[in-house]
Image 1 (cartoon, rainbow, N blue to C red):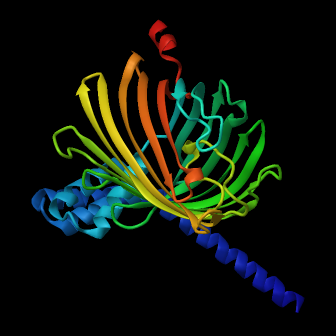
Image 2: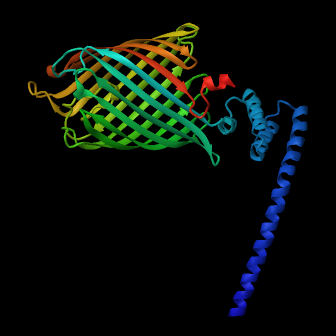
Image 3: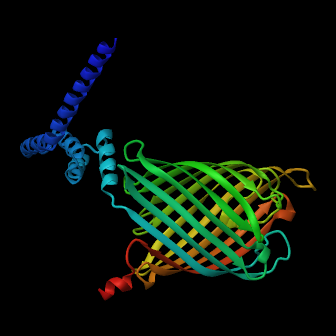
Length: 401
């Protein structure tokens, strides 16, 4: 038995050796073989430049061999020959993503705003000045052949009078960019948020999401479906629970007239968070505590008015139907219609490259079937916005060189 097993082991080792040797041999000569095949295909394409089969074969071999820019040129030729070919669209998306450099962008916003009614339907209803600030990170990089995107945000509002309304939030999510179908990518992600409100810890949540994106056909399209579990601090009347939201985004250039960009952003939110919504949190958080179904959308129209300024108008409309909040007078479940038109004026490079000024106005009208919950509010904001890549030296240092 011992001799038999020694024989089997020696045979297995010998087979492994020859397989390894064959692999090394093939690896050593694969680049030359691929290069020869590419040369042969290139010569054939010169004779038949509109042959889609030859161009597709060249693109696939170039991509597999690591000649990504040659593959990109071939896929771009194929798009002209066959714009709706799904294999070509997938290959073009795949190669473009592989050629994208690693990018890191930080956006910092600091400013002040005037708000006429920060307490909404609770008293005292008096205007005040507020300080606002946020810093967001967008990072994309290729890791082991897969492109990963990370989003992070830290932001908050400090109130001059109503200090119990001071609010802060920090969040993070990360996930890979994967090929979905022709012209579209899919990004699954995990993340979470924590929040500070009324001078104490407010809530924490964990979330999972999936985002489909496309920049084809001279437009940007995105749909995100996100589910999260949120838990509030015991101090607040809201407790904990799940919510699910779906949000879309469609950006269309040259709408109504040349240079006008239209952005349409619909959404639907289903919340099953326990407790009630008696605590007023800033409308910027979008998700309010409570159990309800909300659906709505926002439309933005943005037009450059000069080379250094852009003007925008927008309107957001949403309907929020609560399941547990009851109007004590009528006995009906609470239902709110929120309408919020606004306008903006942006000077993107007023102070320096990628450092500009943004002026915003927003009117908020909340019409509730519970009269005690209706309110109006005016918000005027002036903020400086600075965008930069933290991996690069600052401009003043580059200028000195």
